[in-house]
Length: 407
Image (cartoon, rainbow, N blue to C red; front, side, top):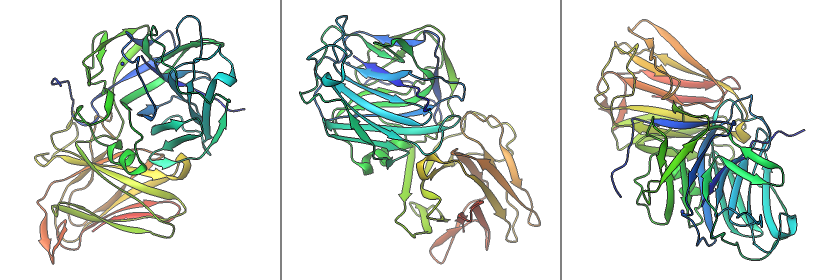
């Protein structure tokens, strides 16, 4: 039996806004009457629309929990607006035409299955809706296919007296509250392409991007309100919702590469300042995201080096979100250096993997996770390639044989 946890943001609609280091903070919904309530701030929506967000589902989360809903139906409960859902094994998007009560002939839905339970790790989901038979679902920047249900063929209907809410929906099954964590929630009145979804996936937005009509970074970190950052509308947090330090892989800038079949190696370069080879096994990896945070991290506990040049993060993209174990090997090449790692923005302790020219060790991680590292020495160009000392390399290996190599 499939388990579903439905993410519903009921979207019912610049100044400087709070932005923390890296992914900053996020909002956790406990599934116990927790939600964020806005007024009717989205009452004139038209297709196409795109919804994208980072999601963390705890293994204890239960089925039928909605996260995102825009222009939600009023008390007469006709299908209207657009809503999204995600569960342990599937995710989907729907919209209503306003022509009748909550029956399948008045809505159109697309759902795609995961081949592995995605709970217990951060994943990025995106939903693009252009029409009743033109919807696309993306997991970590990869389109997942899926199938349609419902038979509504009319245009999407806007409920002019419906509230906007995050983490809650009321339908034929009663009140459904989301159980999980959300970060970097985006709402666009535009059909983002695959390239655009990947471009925006692991970096913060400015909040004034063209066609962006809703943006939540949840960086407040405290208090009973969270701001929709495009319009400045304030939402009221109700019930048992908690502020958390986010573990989503988000930086100030990012780079990505998704692979064609058979490609196993790629060179990452950051404006000729840093470069390293990334090698993959095509039957395990879809690709990777590299992001950079341009300031000191939220915690320097365990670190003995400075962060004057910021630090990097890596988000490996495995096929269908399937969990794999991978490791980072640091191989010395005759020079002293300190390389430090942690498991993401919510990990408060940096680990040193190597301290002198005679040692060699590795950092190991399981599942889809981010990897932050900082290199203490200045990089010097050798034959137009920037290296970490002479002959030094950093290898990230997956047990199945794939490897990310830093030369």
